[in-house]
Length: 295
Image (cartoon, rainbow, N blue to C red; front, side, top):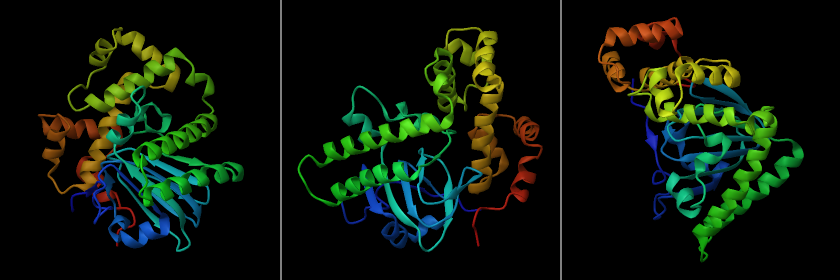
């Protein structure tokens, strides 16, 4: 197994000094960077609009249909690849966390609902009216990126901020979770999930997260059950297993090293944990999983 490649801005902006932002129309992007046809991840945030064509986009072991009006929003580190029709058209842009957070000091990129967590639902399907508005934003972003105007960074930041606000409204509306969006318990659970994202390699017990959030384990479990119908332990295990699957499928390292990277000193215990939550041992999972779109 080859190690999964991780691409930054430089791999897409060769010949320029760009290290924080990249934009292109989709046909040119696909034609110029054939290496993205195989599974890979990025060190940046990615936003892709499809205006034509169809296909399948695989992101972290889940597949999503590609069709006109699809907007995909990926966090850094998510493994993805796709199989697209020749007619695929649209726009794509990448940027680093620093690009956005340095422009807007009163909020962060992770404040947007689709970028809050690694495991957020990664696609929005726009209706015809929404596509017109969103496509104009993408076009303006791409035009500004190609130009060499003064205050270019500031304008790009403002344009993507407006786009993210517009997409957030659709994302929240389509999630059928508008009441949860305004609830205190919802935000507490989202904060828990963010803590798990950051610390799952070293903190694996519900009690540890309850302590970080200054509440009892019992109260924290009540919140997670109310909002997600899952226990705190379920959320911790889901994040660990996702990362384990990434390492097992996309990296050429021994199973013992996978366990070690996830914070397990005892490989036998890691294997038991993995099998408990997937029904397969790590080795069985590797053998049973077909790599996406590989030839």
